Length: 249
Length: 312
Image (cartoon, rainbow over all chains, first blue to last red; front, top):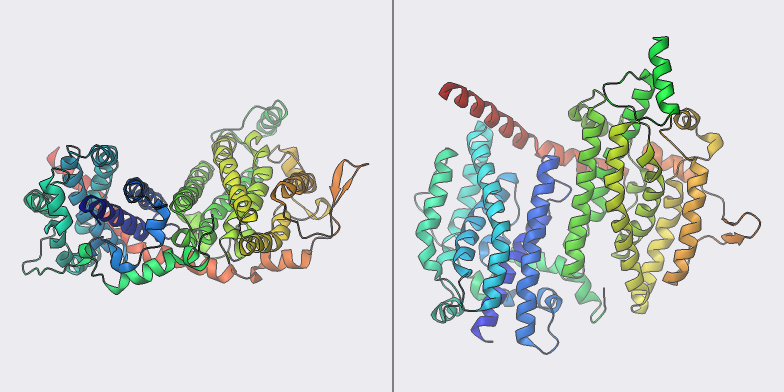
């Protein structure tokens, strides 16, 4: 597979998987207004995924479609980072993950607008407005929960502890990312880490939260080595397409 | 008092909307609180049977449409709670009434969604029946309810079309898909027909609600309209409605239809449907699991205000 296709699938898989996780909240949110907000973010992310999959399908040809790419690939073919596939957890974990990812995606898309690939650049440009809102919304919730009550602060610390080690993977370029960076298609993710940390620190400071001191790195998702969580998720997501192959829905 | 009541009745008579600050009879207020909060609760509980298929929607397009649709229902619940609050009842109190079983919600949501075709059947039949009930409510005498319904009806007609489109796709698909669609219609038809409530001679509140122009058509009139509409649309779908007595009556210019199973209706209303307990458990769990989030948001807002006052 060529690097641009693999990179496009990576971008698509990230947002499909996170969108799917967020959509698990629809109908079960802690406050009606926030049920609407998290569903809206899920919808934005699924929409971004469709744009990337459609582009990849066009490049792949051979009757590939957005749906064949989302529904008929195996977990090992998925190129999303491990952060997005983790279970939704409680509201604190969902918020923390969204904040980490949106802060990353904001920087990524800001740079990706200047991609030498005009379709990638256009999707980044179009999505940036949404991501700006996701980042603002999740930052506000990090502050609310960090600063709110002892209980909410305690839960946020647990969520950060559970998710932190998955964040370095965002900034370690997979081979297809490096190849696309060399062609000026993709930003160099390692160059985004400093600004990302700066954003996390400043929001955490307001939220009375801190970055864990002894972090480790758990990675592999971007090259297809996933946690068991993804297999369960895809088993559910893909079941109709697998059960009734070739049908129109 | 006599005078205020006369002014109220004159407004009703002249089709002038009653607004929250206007004088209104206690019974009018109570009826509206009951009806509007029940309507809001139905939107919220109604998110559950369809929400269950978001993670299993068979294409990305269907997934996006379904998320948007269920999100619309949350939005409808929100306008309706806000509209009901103008009658001097808080959202917390209403939610408490739902969770303790004091307030009801539409019984239709106590049936399970077993296959993807159920998402089509809910859109076509359940939203179709809801629209029949709701379009006349756009002319309801109470201003906030009427205005909320105008917005809601616009979105509902889109929901109904997407449901019909799902069924049409399945009906034109493989044999298994066609069977799935027919099975869903078989299960959802009668519960949808029951959504219009008891027959007119068994509907004690109807006459007063009609006099107050909260209601514009009787249960049986709306039910007949719904059946006439669906009987024709089922032909386009090339699927059948599970009623052997369903037949066009040239004299009445309406479809005749079979006997409704009122025993089932009351059984589900009284809490013994297939999913009453499951739906309530899901709402209670969302509410309880969200308590720490709501408390944190309140505590943060208070701290923030205190800090701002200190600065000022």
